[in-house]
Image (cartoon, rainbow, N blue to C red; front, side, top):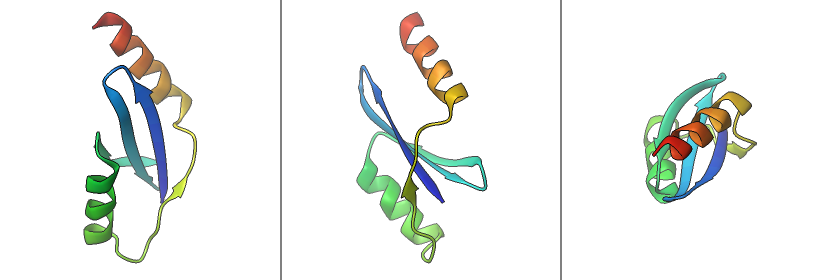
Length: 65
């Protein structure tokens, strides 16, 4: 399980990945950790960089906004 953070103009966005797939996204790290504990109680998430294609998509999205 991986967790990544993206600093957007609206604040931090948090993403959780399992087996390389996005499974949860939130503006609240606390809400994400609670969701993770509920659905995957025995799989802690380690921090990792947000995959490059997500970073590029988010950069593009916020430039367009």
